[in-house]
Amino acid sequence: MTSGQTLAVVTDVSTLSLAAEVDETDVLLVEPGTPGSAELDALPGAAYDVVVDSVDVSPTTSAGGGVT
Image (tube, rainbow, N blue to C red; front, top):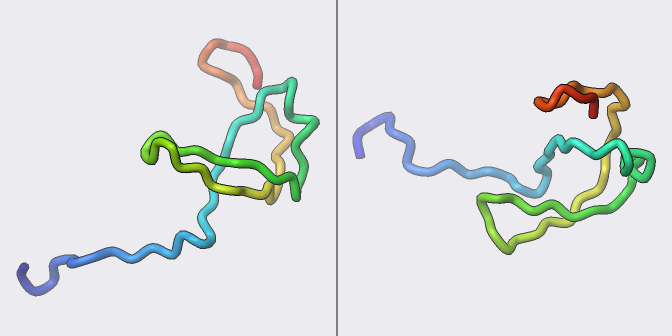
């Protein structure tokens, strides 16, 4: 270690957020306050309880050419 190098990074994981895409057949079931579970590829087997904070109703174009 030399002066100025980062020794450790501390992150408060109690308030992480994520953005997720929801299939058009399920989007009407999602509203603020809806509980759920999130799994991350980087942490196999770990699941995190989540709560929907907001829903953006604007469609996005998918790579397949459709609208999701």
